[in-house]
Amino acid sequence: MSSKHQPIRHVAIVGGTHGNEITGVYLIKKYQNFVELLQGYDFSIELLTANSEAVAANKRYIDCDLNRSFKIEDLSNNSLLGYENQRAKEINQQLGPKGNSRVDFIVDLHTSTAPMGVNLVLLNDDPFHLKLADYVQQRMDNVTITWEQLPDHHFLMSIAPRHILIEVGATPQGSLRHKIFEQTEQATTHVLNFIEAYNKQELPVSSSSLEVYKYFDVMYLPQDSQGNIIGMVHDNIQDRDFGLLKTQDAIFKLFDGSDIVYEGEECYIAFINEAAYYDEKKAFSMAKRVVLSIG
Ligand SMILES: [Zn+2]
Image (cartoon, rainbow, N blue to C red; front, side, top):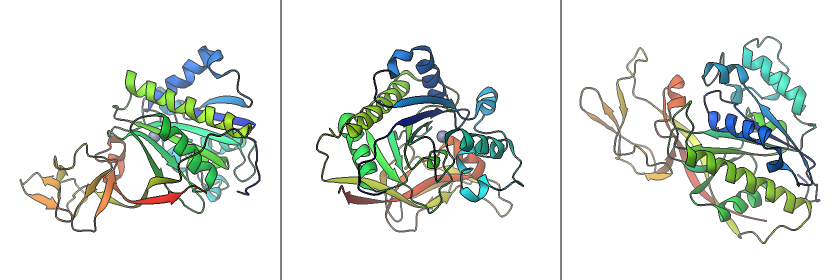
């Protein structure tokens, strides 16, 4: 992004990208029913329930993960015929197309079954996105920032050049929790207020630097040679999202009673025992903590 000030004119707030993360689904419904909540901004706001079939089925997805379906090569691949591949193409038509999108900014609402607090996911580390994350973090408790940079990202929000994913937890899938709903709504309001201040060139002074977690690897659940799960996440790390994992810390308790210890280098871990990741048998994500200066 150039350093030239480019106002944001069209914002999309998206919920239900994962059909069983219903906090976002119901926040979208709330905005539809109480339209005054989104009035008064100097940009247009549209609302989208991204995966309504999965919402109706109370499942994360029907055929494949919608939030992994937005790489440019996949959007133009006509041999991908799953429901979500089709839906991704429709959403890309509606909000995009990716690379030259009608919408300037996308907020995508998610939840986690892990107690991550308010987790803001960035795909870019340019001053706009760092200032945005800093703005929200300065105004709410328990906000962590993760950064997942890829050349052509697969997330829905990557359709627009500017975006943020708000992921709040812990909440079970398919369930609404008051506090989680409120935190999601507050974070969304802060994002909209930031955009308004940005457009008016009235942003408050940001922090000089921002602490972000950058994922570098994933740990899988312990399995036998046939891929059967043979143990579980150890109580030693359960619910310690964004905590430090040290070499020789116990990470799995096997059904035979033995412990598996971590043998890699020190790192921070998140999405610990995330229910949504059992389809891929992932136990947790591993991250490095980096401090980025806000230019
Ligand atoms: Zn999600």
